[in-house]
Structures are given as structure tokens and as C-alpha cells.
Length: 387
Image 1 (cartoon, rainbow, N blue to C red):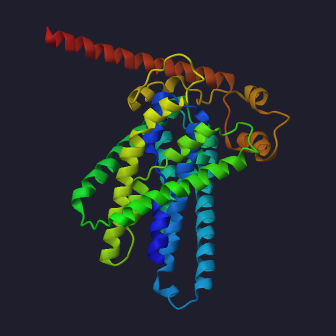
Image 2: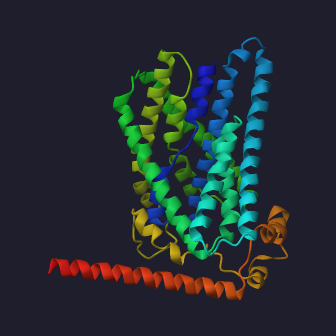
Image 3: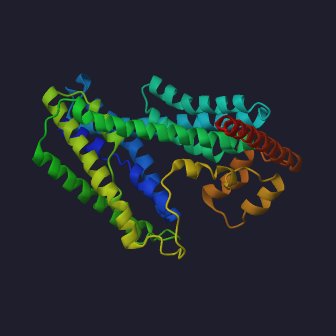
């Protein structure tokens, strides 16, 4: 029973890296991109917490208690770990926002970047140290820091942070998929064809039973509806990846059971990534998910090309206090959005004055000109050596 619950919890982790890369390359609808990405990161965190909860049920301390007590203990443990880990991440993120708001580090971008990197890792290390979910903490820390802390950074550091984290993410993804490929030949496997086939079939059925009914329900409360094409693409993009495989490696069961779970997980990961992920682009073109844009798109798979446009992005915090009041504080806002816009964002973020904004733009131009001059100098030296 515990083995089945553990396998079910880990195989529910969705990792649509290939799908998101194709979405970006084809410039798919932003709503579709956000839903798939948001579901995947939260789904992974929940899957990790659920796997830890199931393994807790397999501990010797739980052997002598009734199944009812074990069930409620597992549910309480799950919610305790989920909520506490989330609050740890949010707390560290808000602390970083206040520190970078009240301490002026704009003249030392390297220190500013170092401070951000430290606060990015602190929630994970602290949560793991107290036996909670580091992934859950770092997830909510990232969401909160992108909403508040990011806008307290200088424009130079904002661009540097984007390049740094995107490069780290690209390297991490490459290493993960390389490891998955090497795992085929590196571990003892025990292939059970019936288990693999039924697992793949039930994964597809279970995802359909989640995507379509839930989309139908939430459409009653959404201004922007999730149409049938989006729902089908969301169902099709339920790839399994590194999280599921990493969780399978850390299960503590008997050798035969462990080898079966690891092998089955690896086969499902390869099937979904290669077959479903490889079919995503033809499917998107077939369903014409980008039909609203009539001009021919430039399909780009290079993350380097994507990162090159970071300087022109809209996320740079170039709003003064007056501009923020005019553009974002609306009288018809309700709930958390109203409180966030009116109280939380002004409290946790610093808005530039016109003088600070002008100085930041001048500094960006100065650095750009200096880098360009250095590049031209190196190009001239190379040409002279060739001659």
C-alpha cells in the first residue's frame, strides 16, 4: 500500500520543460504559457511534500497505530509541511525586500547581486535544516521576491540577475537531462511491461479527469476563459521529468521494489519527454494555438537569443511614485489585489525619483558604451593579428 502511494505521489510531478521551450519558441498565448508553467512548479512542490508524507507513514513509529490515525496524521503532516515551508519562503523574501529597500547598494552591483543570491538560497537551506520542504520554501520565496525584491534592485542588477538565473537554469536543465540519459546505463533496472503500460495509461486518464472538469468549473469565475484548445494542450503537456525520477531514487524500499519503481519512472519520463514533448510543436501548429497573430513568427530555440532582449523588457522598475499611483492604483480593485497595490507594494518596494531614474539611465548608457568600446578594441586586435 505504501509503495503504491509513494509511486503515485512521485509520478504526479509534472515537468513540462520541453513544452515550455516550444511555447517560447512559437510565441504561444501568454495565458497558456502561464497556466502550464504555474501548474508545473506548484505541482512539483506538492508532489515532493506528498512523497515525504507517504515515506513518513512507512517509518517504524507509524507501524503500531491504526490506519485511520495514520491517515489523519499524514494529512496533518502534509498541511503542516506545506504551509510552514511556504511561510518560511515568504518571510525570507519579504525580509530581503525590506533590506534592499532601506540599504542603498546601487553603487555596488556585485554586493547587491550577492545579497540577492544569498537570500535566494537561505529559505531552502533553512527549511531543509528544520526537516521541512526546501523546494516549497524556495518556490514561494521566488514568487514573492519577483513581486517585491526585484523592484528594489538597481537597473544594472536587474539585468544581471536575469542573465545569471537564466544561465543557471539552462545549465541545470542540461545537466538534468544528461543525467537522465546516463541513468539508462548506470543503474540496475527491472522492467515490468504491464506496470509501465498501465501507469502511462492511468497517468493520461488521471490528467484528463483533472484538466477538463476543473477548467470547466473555473471558467465560471474567470474573465479570460480557458478554451478547448488550451485544455487539450494542457492535458498533452503533462510530461514527467527530473523531479519524479529524483524522488524515485530516494525511496527507501526493498531492492526489488525500488528497482521496479525507478525503472518504471524512468521509462515514463522518457516516453512523455520524447513522444509527448516531441509531438507538441506539430500539435500546436495543428490546433493553430497562435492563430490570433497573422504575421509569420520567427521560431527561436536559442535561450541566448531570448536573453539578449532583456534590456528592452518591461520588468525594469522605471516607475516613479507619481507614475505608480496613476498607472496601477485603480478604484475597482478588490480583495488581495487592492491591499497589495495600495499597501504592500509601496511598503516593500522603493520607487525611483526622476533624478534616480535619470542617473540610472545614464549609468546604463555609460556601461554599454564602455563594453561596446572594449568589444570593438578586441575585434580590431583580432583583425590585425589575422593580417
